[in-house]
Length: 544
Image (cartoon, rainbow, N blue to C red; front, side, top):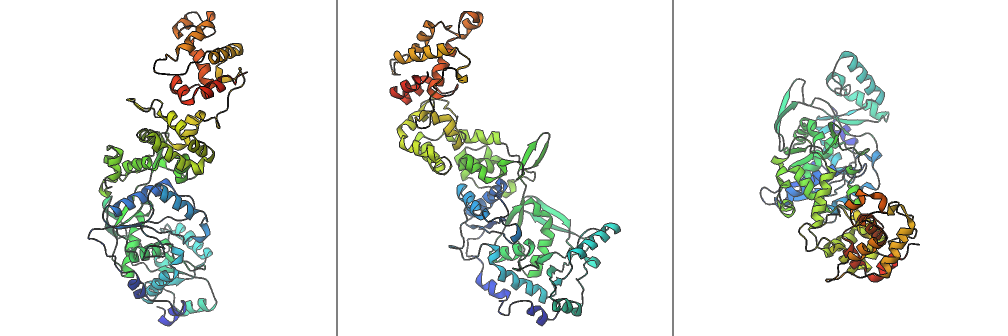
């Protein structure tokens, strides 16, 4: 075992001891049963929707127990850190209402970024070295590769353990020689585990579990500057000092629980309770797979923000994936009902974008026109600034458009599933956005003779009657079509198609396309009423 003087020489002389940090971060003064939870993303790429899912569970448990929820940025992998990631995290947290209850400005347990906590980790690494529970390891990449080759040849399990851990029992003289030569080193945890031993633990989602005890001497402090810890040590120190309990994290860490319990014990910390959340999955043909950052755009939180999915709809959907009983409740009730860890499944729930679209459409259909405009503009100010300005400038027109087949009807239209749908669904109502049709041979007229298109347009404009309570608005199209030789209905046209240029359907489609630019729209009379006489005539007369 190394002498304390040698160990201490590896650290700054003014480095505080663990007692300093215990005093600085005392137990929290919270009601009994209050949970302190954290979401701890690594800024190595965009925020995954599975991260929002896990963070939502963390935030819900803390806030419904009178506790605290925080976000801790785990940036110890400096080589893979993406500069823009932290800002994207903040955007996603704000959009989905999972911003932390405390941060560097408001909290007392920071810094909340691991790279700013170096001295804290070094204090505990030094203490483990002093107690002989850790040791410096000078094994190079080539040395480790050689160990791996020999293990494979011998049929041994891979890892750095037992007799394969060449620096575990090095003499003080061997260590001193390497230190004097300035050789780089990592610090490894001296695992107390032995082969063939099974350990048990309780997972708050999965219940009682057993696993092989850890016997690997894992790296807990890296060799490069700045001297940062690995996740294994950092999370143990941070979760203890920030007084996190329970730790709700991704399923991928389940196999590390035996190691993490060893670290908590070696550090003298009370073990935390763990809950491991199953990953979100996607149906791919006949099999299920994890959502892929590379292949699935819906895996990124940015996708939901950019597309303008209402946060409440996504929250409702995700809460239903976490606890199936919440999916059976009305949205307001489901958002207010606490998530129960015991109701979380152990199989990864499937993300179904068609289902999310339906939920989102149902939610938007419950909003008033005023609410839709406010929320649309709030989103579009960043994502579609041109139309946001137009809608704000023409709010009465926007309200008239939104009222069509939505207000005063038993089954309101559900043509908005997300805010990015607003432009293709309602953009044509606004003259600044709409592009009038100027040629009679446009394909949207369905191949109708251009001369007939022009005749329909001029006849409709010349005799135009605005919609009103006593007006049978569609009669003007029907009479005009009959005068131009169109069949009165589809049945008559099908009986003798050579006798007619088309049916009343084709004739009305000409008017629809001229007014909206599309072959599908809500009730044509209501569209015309919303546009107003001058805009209707301008669009009809634009065709030449």
